[in-house]
Image (cartoon, rainbow, N blue to C red):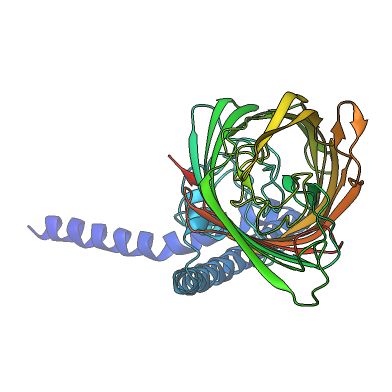
Amino acid sequence: MYRNGRVMQAKKCVGALSLAVLPMWIGACLAQESATVDPALREKIESQGRKIDAMRSRMAEQLAELEQMKRELASQELQYNDLRKAVGMTALEEARATGSPGAGSGTAQAVAAPQDQVPAGTPAPGAPVAPVSQPVAATQPVGKRPEQDERPPEVAPIFDQPGVLTPRGKLIIEPSYQYGYSSSDRVALVGYTVIPAILIGLVDVRQVKQTTQTGALAFRYGLTNRMELEVRVPYVDSHTDTISREIFTGTAQDNLFTTSGKGLGDVEATLRYQINDGGADKPYYIGWFRAKSRTGEDPFEVTSDCVTRCVENYTGTGLPLKNPTGSGFYSAQLGMTWLYPSDPVVFFGNFSYLHNFERKNVSRNVLGSGKQFLGDIKAGDIADISVGMGLSLNEKASISIGYDQAFVGRTQQNSHPLSGSARATLGSLLIGGSYRYNDKETLNITLGVGVTRDTPDTTVTVRVPITL
C-alpha cells in the first residue's frame, strides 16, 4: 500500500509538471512559427483587414442613405399623385399603352429592391453614389412604347376641311350651326342670287341686310386609315331686308322690302385621302374632292316680284318674293390641304378650285307674267386659298387663327359675261378654338370676320363632332 501511494504521488507530480511546462512549450512553438513569417506580409494582411472593415462600414452607411432616399421618393410620389388628382390629370395614365404611372413610379420600383439582393451592375463599395435626381437604369424596359401615329396633328378646325381623318371603320356624326350676318349699301342686285354677293338683274338697291342660319348634320366614315367619306345635309333659314326707292319714280322716300326662306339646302359629299406619312418637321398632304347637288330651292324656282318692285318696268326684273335655300347649280370642287408640325405650333393651309356646271334653257317665274326664259346660265368659278396656324394649349384645348380668301369669276349668260356682273373677292379673318371633352366628343367654335365689302360681316360656326 505504501508503494502504491508513492506511485500515485509520483504520477501527480508528473501531471503538475506537464501542465506547467505545456504553456511554455506552446509559446515557444508560436514564437518559433512567428519568427518564420515575413513582417512585410504580416503588415499587408493587417492593412487589407483594415480596408475591408472600412468598406463594410461605408457600405452600411450607403445602405442607410439608400433607405432614406426610398422613403423620400415614396413621399414625393404620394404628393405628386395627390396633385394630379386635384387638377384632373388622370387622362395621362389612360393615354399610356400599359396604364402605368409616370417615370417616377418606375424609378421607385427599381430602387425598392431588397437589400440582400444586389442586382447586376451594382457599383463596388466605395464607388461614388449617383445623385437622387438621376433615374436608376433598369435592365428591362418598363411598359410598352406607344405606337407611332402617322396621322396629321389635330388642331382647332377653322376651315371646312378637317386636318385629322377618320380612322378605319369609325363613324363620326358632326352636328353644326352657323350664323351669318351681312350688310351692304353699295351692291348692285340683279334679281336672283347665284352665290353670296352676286345677283342678276337691273334693280337699284341701296341697303341690303341679310341674316342666314344654317344647321347641318355631317357623317364621316373611315374607309381606310388614310381615306374617309363625308356626307353633309344642311338646313337653311335666311332673312333679307332691302331698303331702297321704287325705280323710275321721283319719290325720295325709302321703302323696306322683306323676304325670307327656309328649307333643305344643297346636299354635298366629300372624299378625302392622306397622300403621305409626314411627321415631325415634315408636312402632311391631304387631297380631297367634293361634289355638290342642288337639292335646295334654287333662285330660278322662286317667284320674282314685279308689282311692288317693278313699277312701270316691263323688262320683268325684280327681287324674289322668297329667299332661295340653294345655289341652283351642280358644282365640283378639287382641293389640297397641308399641315406642317413645328413644335409648339402647327401651320396649315388649303387650296381649292370650284367649278359650277352650266345650266341649259333656264327660266324663272315672274309675278303676273309667268315664266321668263333666260337661256344658258353659268355661275362663275371660285378659286380659294387659306392659311393659318394652330397652337395646342394642353391635351384638351387648342386655338387657331387663319385667313381665307376666295376669287369669284363673272356669271355668264349664253356664253357671254352677264351685264352687271363683276368679279368679286371674298376675304375672311378666322379665329377658332377647340375643347375635347373626352375621346368621343369635341367642341369647335369659329369666328369669321369679313375684311372685304362683298364678304359677310360676321360668321359664327359651332361644331360638335361625336365619334361612335
